[in-house]
Image (cartoon, rainbow, N blue to C red):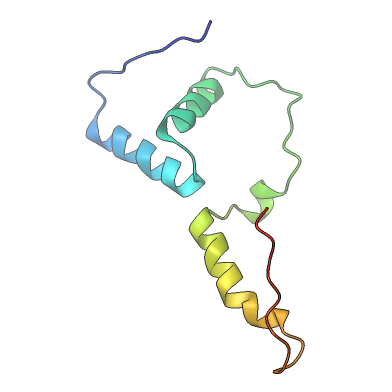
Length: 90
């Protein structure tokens, strides 16, 4: 059964921190809150390992990714006469 909860009397700083973290991570406030509760309660599986380098290299949110793609689009040209290749939207 999936439980639904309502939190009351959440301090402004906590609410602001949750919204900020959710935005930074590109996730919903709900998903961020559940993840933090699981982490705090030690409910994450010990053998569940991330298969990426996020903890070493960091994480880009969607806007940072878009900015990178905009700023590196010029490198998709072979020479001045070659049109920019279209990136597929995966």
